[in-house]
Length: 161
Length: 161
DNA sequence: AGAAACCCTCTAGTTACTCTAGAGTCAAGA
DNA sequence: TCTTGACTCTAGAGTAACTAGAGGGTTTCT
Ligand SMILES: [Zn+2]
Ligand SMILES: [Zn+2]
Ligand SMILES: [Zn+2]
Ligand SMILES: [Zn+2]
Image (cartoon, rainbow over all chains, first blue to last red; front, side):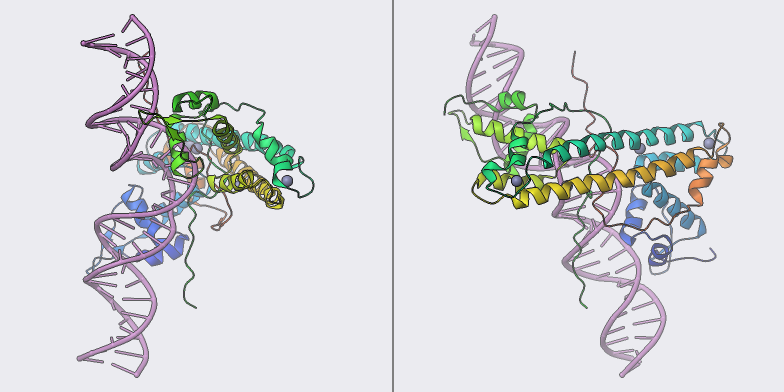
């Protein structure tokens, strides 16, 4: 294998964390790579490309499941790509749905915000009051919606220096 | 305690799952309720209201941490509500940021979609091609963004009937 | 009395990672 | 040569906000 990279080098090339690369491997998105004498992972160009594609899909907020499906097409270049197109369309509607929902929320939140202009005793705060007497029932919807916040607060410890 | 509800009744009143109520209790959002002789949880009106407020905040996509902060103001009605207003504003910007990000994604995804009009062999699919040669670097941003999909696929088993 | 419907605690699983611990490997500097 | 430091390895736990299940006890209906 010409041009073999260690995991840290692959990480630098793709902007992907080392631990994430190992995670993708065990999640079956990246095949098990070759190993050096000292048991270090060694990656070739095709893996670099594959990881780049994965990261690009992630940056488009696709799930690993969606990405796995796409990768199966990369691995079977003769297959008809109809499902690729469909998957993309579905994902676009995931995003569109979420935007619509968030716009609704945003409006509701801004209305709520208007209920308290000055700071005052909490018991008179219009916001807390507005939250208590919740207006819209807002039925549980089974749509594919996620949340607004970062998924898993990666509170990174400050390194020495 | 007049008007004591069992957990299932509280669930029905608030539209909140029983397991979720227990989860909120152990997460410290709901105080430990009274218990019946048979060790069943018993809730009064104030808990009903409190849970309703929690659910309303959740429907606005606040985190439990944000909600916990709000609840501390409900519990200390004399405190000045300035932080409530601030928290709400911050959360509004969480939502607004996410909307902006998703709109960007939507545009990118629609551009991608245009790259394949017909179905064909995967190796010629413009979408897969477009994904391979990822254009924008899209640096890892530490903003408070979540994902588009449901957080934890609750694939519910079909109940009999 | 027996069964259905409810409730209890505890545990594990979900997503897509991130962080840690405890160890091994490798290149360069003293 | 020895040592230091940067890098790598595995395995396991932790994150958010629940959901689902096992293996029991309780209440209620018939
Ligand atoms: Zn999607
Ligand atoms: Zn206020
Ligand atoms: Zn927020
Ligand atoms: Zn195509």
